[in-house]
Length: 228
Image (cartoon, rainbow, N blue to C red; front, top):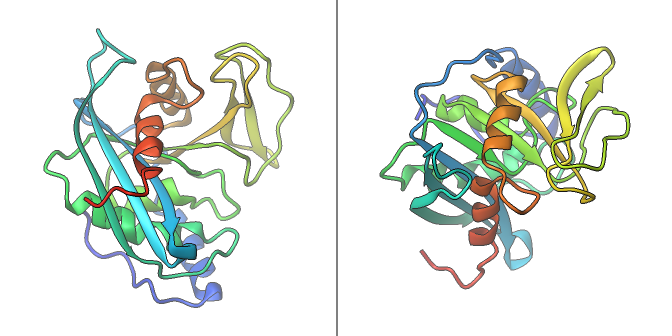
């Protein structure tokens, strides 16, 4: 894990200013080690939002069997929620628990897929991008809904894509990951390009709309009786 980036006890104005500063440190070029393991990350909340629940699933990457990848490790970490829900500041609410989950892993992945935004964010620092800086690992955001930006209609067939724009800047793509099912929003987080992000998401797509790493993390996170 990278060195401490910042403290978490920040007022919203301070957090927004920090996002703008941290976004300048993102690398949106490919800097990936050979991928042997991919992690999926999903965050949930319990006890009326008072407890943050982070789930991380690590899969063994095998192009011969993809997208049917074997699970080598999975963890759930819970801790008190540090920030209330504030639009645009979700990473400050979610990442502390995610970091706690990564600290429990014995296998460190070379690529991380996050249920959330990468740079498709008003200040270009969604949860996937922010987490990538903390971990100093390549990260991809795969979100179920649009937070920011505009796009044309995307085709209805699996694999159809259309760019997601902020003005003239391309900040992600809208991907029809399953035919005639609501699309997902893919954007790079850190140490990876948009093109490579999309390639990896497509490689990991099974029969559902989510790539296998985040699908399995979502399933693990939804098990509220889990007490690992």
